[in-house]
Structures are given as structure tokens and as C-alpha cells.
Image (cartoon, rainbow, N blue to C red):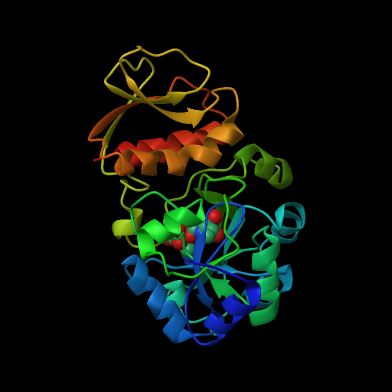
Length: 305
Ligand code: TXA
Ligand code: MG
């Protein structure tokens, strides 16, 4: 059910949960200062409490004020990329945000989403915690129809429509004098490295392994087989390519347009479930740089058993 900012404010202020649009994917949002609201998010998603949430802010000061000390490059990073699809995980002071949000970690994740309605909501009610608005382990939601599918037609959704980027934010983790890549995302790594002046290494998060972080994630029910030469009965592929005429086709978009593919990826994976597909071959004959690395990572995890 689509609602406006005033209605979303009322739900959030009453300790409730609303689906919010961001430029990446929809989030399931509650006030960062409502323990009841935060607890509802974990329950709705069947998310283990060992998996911490991102705090969504409308300005960098909220993040800076929570930091135990300001990590080098943090100011340049947020000045360059916020609002936008970058999440930073930083060491915070003990009293910053509740242990439930941070899964008792000494760090907290922050992001400033680039979406006018969500910015307006945060400016009015304060920071919001928001994981992606999907059942843990399943494809994320990039359209309000996906929220209705996962949480029912009456679940409140701010704004509605299709999200602009289609894949989650890129996560950077600060640890021992350096930034590490925590998750590939909508913001390409090269753009971040240009600000940092060094190459980013991947860091496995300090978060204990839990279902949401097991390798299989973003996954439809169908078994996906990644291949550079698909020829099966059911193919997930590209609009500008030719496949066997007898194959049933699901399209990710144009193979020369990674932004278009990122925007469509979760909808396409969800479409397989809608049509009760059991098995599909996915065309991965694509470049591996830039946004393609995020797309390939999502497909890899979605195809893992
Ligand atoms: O684009 C996005 O980031 C979306 C939109 C809604 O903002 N949000 C999102 O949230 O993808 P979620 O909860 O699905 O993924 C956040 C990831 C999780 O893997 C979580 O473990 C990690 O961020 N995370 C959160 N806090 C952390 C912390 N303190 N240390 C390490 N990892 C953390
Ligand atoms: Mg998620």
C-alpha cells in the first residue's frame, strides 16, 4: 500500500516499520531510536540478531558525531559520494545507537541515501535503520510490487516505483588504519580507490556467520547455472543476443549497458519464481570490471546451493 511522507512519519514515530525507497533497493525502515521498531524489522525479515543494520542518515554530522575517532579519508569519502550508494562501517562510541542495531559490535554502518522522499522522512523523524526489504536470503526489492509480494498488499510503502540503481550500496569497512571493501555494490570500486589513493582489499566482516551472510543469497527458488554459452530450455540473458529459438528467455537487459542490467537483476530473478522455473542457465559472457563485478557477485551468490 503506497503512502506519503506524512503517513510514513506517523508509522515511524509510533514505533512501526515502513518500506522506504532508496536509489539502490527498498529498505525496511524503523526509527534508530525505537527499540520496538528495530526489533520488528528483525522479526519481519526473519533476520538473526547477529546481523547488524545500516543507520540511514540525512547528513554526515550524525555519522561523524558517533565516531570514536574520525578515520582518515572519511570526510573526503562522504563529501564525494553522499548522498549516494556508499555505506561506511566505522568504530563508534559506546553510547552511539543501540546494541541491537549494531549486533553488539564496536562499529556501526552509516549511509546517506539519495532519494528525495526518504531524505525528507529522515530529516523529519531522525536516523532510520533499514536492511533491504526482502525475506532474508531472497532477491532484494527494487519495485513496490516486490514489497507487496514479500510482506503482503497492505504493507506500507513510501512513494513507490522502481529504484534507480537496482543493486545495494557498496560497503567500506574501516579497520586498523585502512579501508577495506565489505561488499561490492552500486558504487564502483575504482571511483572509491581514486579518492583513497590505494587499492581496496576485500574484508570478510567481523560479523559472525549467520543465514543472511551465508554465501547463498539474493537467490530465487530456481537452480541457476552460470555459463558463457547458454543453450538450455530456460535462459537468463541479454536483449541484444541471439539464443536457441526453443529456449524460454528471461532478460537482464542489454549486454553493453551494466546500469540497465543492475537495475533489472532482482526483478528478473523474482520473475523466475513467479513463473515457477526450476532451472535456468544464466549468460555470464560479460566483462568483469566496474559494475559488472557487482552483477557477477550477485549472480554467483544467487546460484550457489
Ligand atoms: O543499499 C543498501 O545498502 C540497502 C538500502 C536499503 O540502504 N541496505 C542493505 O541493508 O543492503 P542489508 O541489511 O541488506 O545489508 C547490510 C549489510 C549486511 O550484510 C550487514 O551484515 C552489514 O551491512 N553491516 C551492517 N553493519 C555492519 C557492521 N557494523 N560491521 C560489518 N558489517 C555490517
Ligand atoms: Mg540485504
